[in-house]
Image 1 (cartoon, rainbow, N blue to C red):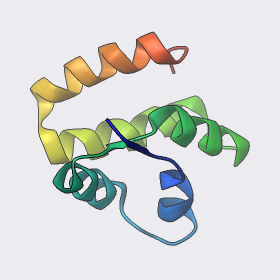
Image 2: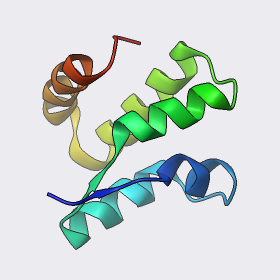
Image 3: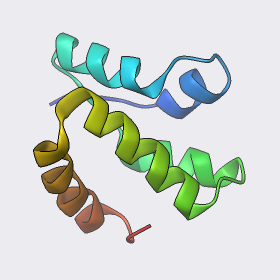
Image 4: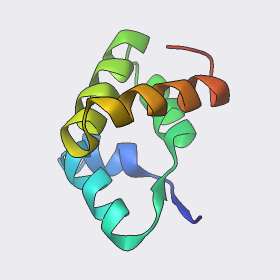
Length: 82
């Protein structure tokens, strides 16, 4: 599956809601590069708690609680738990 880098910049700098980015990526059949998102957020001084909160809220808004549980399991395999 193709992934989209630079989503953090689109959201943080340009004001795109993360929920909209997730929804649009789903509609286009692509995935957000979450590792890149987290790395960019860290570079901009975001705390681990803030990063996790933003992602958790957005993913749950778009996909629901059940998806969020699985999403967090997969994300924790890729990056150190936030």
